[in-house]
Image 1: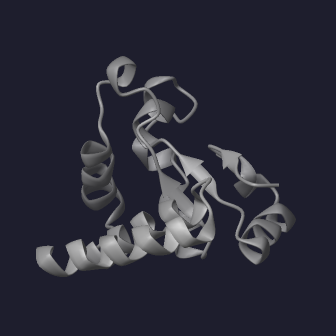
Image 2: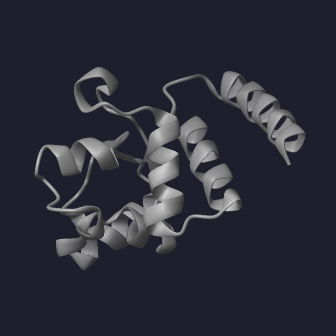
Length: 123
């Protein structure tokens, strides 16, 4: 399995969570669209913070930005304001996105290098 879109109900099966963590199967999380579609009743109900703290390979995505009036920047802002993510957590989430990308490893390495350089410029 290469990745799972959303994975919102994985928490219902501890065995599945253990497998996701062990195999580092990416979970494409879209917080705003999950709340706006009612899959999660509120931000409080969204499992992204718990998944991330448990070591699952979580990525953050904006789903359909025009439909859900969001952007990747807004998704990151929600992670900070509502889930207590730190700057280092956001860095790790970004690197998770590179790890989960459907790209050859040499291209991923180039992206990691570029990202790390840009990150240093921000900090």
